[in-house]
Each structure stands twice: as structure tokens, then as C-alpha cells.
Image (tube, rainbow, N blue to C red):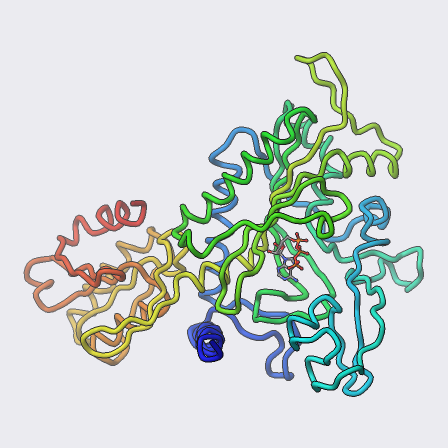
Length: 447
Ligand code: ATP
């Protein structure tokens, strides 16, 4: 058992080290010793995460008529967070160790040290203080003077930006219920025990969709969105056996929710939440109506009635789901010449779509390879690789970053104007005319 756990945490370390080595994710401010629980996305990481965000955005907005997009500001009026309840209750129970001065979330101690009375850092028993409430919102001040009147929060979730714009969007877009508003953006939480790489950070991105409905259709839409969100992961190649539902019991439910279900992913560090689907009832719009003094009810023409819409929310972390896709894709395979590390990423998510490599650095091969590279550039991010090393080594480098197709230009290509396409997962190779290369790869990348 112990061995299996170690192997799994080794797997996480392998993934973290691949991310650093291959330009996916770096620790923030690294040359200054780092900034705890903040990460920077490198050239391949930004492409990869953008692809995850694009897949979410396209599925939710472009492929549907009943969800529209929004990009609200990170800073919002303080009243928003009073209405939402965050100023009062967005807290975690915090305990301090009087021996080593470490600080933990009270509800994480037992899982971390195996005993709720034992400090997970120094291992001393009975040194933890009574839990006290700690608000997770970051504060800053607007204007030149640091005074209470200028206090603003960095938003801890993107959802509130959607609620306060409900009427703006509904009226300007002439939307009838049911309809949804989707948003992707940064959120900030002063987490007490962040960690596990990009799983829990203090600055992260959320992808949230709020679906506004007639109160009588609450259960139907909750079930509908559960199914949609589950299928989104499967459609992007995630293995079904690595996903499961976690229904919230009455003691877990947030103050605003009538029902909540998490989608959990089996990370190398165990089963953890990646997304929440919440039935928020009319809590949010009622609270904002009360605090703003504005009537936020909706008049239903067909039913000839007025009501405050209910909301079904789907909320997922862009970073956390990116990590899940990464863990799911990571593999170490035994092949004829050793072990190959490969990311079996879905083609839509892979940061680099095609790599072009001449067999040798000699002219006129290089000239032709550059032409072939220009041919495939419109397909997405591509790489040109004429660095030393055998073609096999260069394939391995592309496998490690999940590139679905490599195109090799060899001396025969000069004669027959054909190149070799090598496929990442099967490692199969086939020869195609350069004139047909772009169309062939475009079809393969879509398929
Ligand atoms: P947790 O219980 O893990 O703290 P939560 O239930 O507070 O999460 P929500 O407020 O429902 O999370 O946020 C929705 C999603 O946002 C989560 O499912 C997760 O994917 C992401 N998320 C929340 N907090 C963080 C964080 N600190 N770092 C990265 N992603 C986060």
C-alpha cells in the first residue's frame, strides 16, 4: 500500500518536472526564491491552458444558442461581496501550531497527519490551537489613500460578475429564459493550505456558467447540466474510470445551494474535486436585488408571470482541469529502444499540433523543410526542429509535449516531393505528397 502511494506521488513529481523542463509551468518569481502557491505558464503551458479554455468556451457559447459570454472586471463594488455573503462567511477554519508556528486548515489536518490532534509539519501532539475563522479574500485599496472607504477585494470567484450583469445581458441581447452566461477569468483566494502544484493556488482561473431558469424547472436543468459537463471531459479524451460524482451532504452544502454535485478526478494524489454543479435557487439575484435596491425580477411573456430566476451553476478551475487533463494524458511506455514519456493529449488540447523536422541539417533539405513548415503553420502552433540528435530522439521530445503529428523531410522528399507523417499514439508512419499535406493533417486534427 505504502509503495503504491509513493509511486503515485512520484508520478506527480514526474509531471511537475516535465512541466518545468519542457516550458509548461514555472514557479512564480523563481529567481527570488519563488512566491508560494502562484505559478507562471510558459510557452507551451499557455497554449495548453488556452486550448482547455477555448474548448470550454466553444462548447458552452459558440455551439449553443442559449448561452452567451461575458468578461467582467476583477475589481467590483464592495457591496457585491456583502450581498453575496463572502464578506461574512467566505472563511476557512484555521489552526496554528504553537510549536513550529505552521498554519493549517482545521479540516485538512486529519488528512495530512492522520490525526486531527497532530501537527502535519512537526508531528507534535496537542500543539494545535482552537480553530478560528479566516477570510480568504485578498484586500486592496482603490484611490491614493489606504482607507476603509476605498477597500476593494480581488474577486474570489467570477460568478458575482455574472449576477450583477444579469439584466444588462438579458435586455441587451433580448434573451428569454432559460439562458446562460459564461465567463472565464482570474480569481484569488488567500488559501491557508495551498499546494499540490497548480491544484490549489492563491491566484487561479475559473470557467463559470450561470444558467437562469424558471423556478419550476430546477431539477430538470440541474440533471441536464450534470450530464453536459460530465460528457465534456469524456469528449476531450478523459478516461471515464478517472471521473466520479461526489454529491454534497447537508453539512457540506454552501449557504446558497439547495443541491451540489462535484465532479472528482483521480489525480496521482487521490480523488479530488475539479468542478462543481450547483443549484443556487434564487439566492443570488434576491440578495443583489435586496442590497442594490434594484428590481431583478424577470417577466415571462409566455407564462404572463414575473419571478426572480433560479440559477444552475457549473464552475470549474481552468488550472485544475488543465492539471487533470495533463495527469490523464501522461504515460511512460516501454518501446523497443527503452521507455518513452508521452502525453496522449486530445488533439484539440495539445499545445503543438505539428512538428516539422529535416532528416539532416544539410541544404537543400533544410530549405524544403522550411517550405513544408510554412505549409502547416495555419493548422495551429507548430514547431520546426533541426536540432542535433537522431530523428528518433526528436520524435521522443515531441511525444513528451504531446504533439500529435511529426512530419519528416528526407532526401527522397527532394526527388518525390513526399514527406513522412508520424503519428504520436500509434507511432505509425505514412508517406503523403507535400501538395496534400496540409489538407491531410487538417482532417486528421479535426477527426
Ligand atoms: P475546494 O473545496 O477545493 O477549495 P471549492 O469547493 O471551494 O474548492 P468552488 O468555490 O466551488 O471550489 O470553485 C469552483 C472550482 O474552482 C473548483 O472546482 C476548482 O476547480 C476551482 N478552484 C477553487 N479554488 C481553487 C484554488 N485555490 N486553486 C485552483 N483552483 C481552484
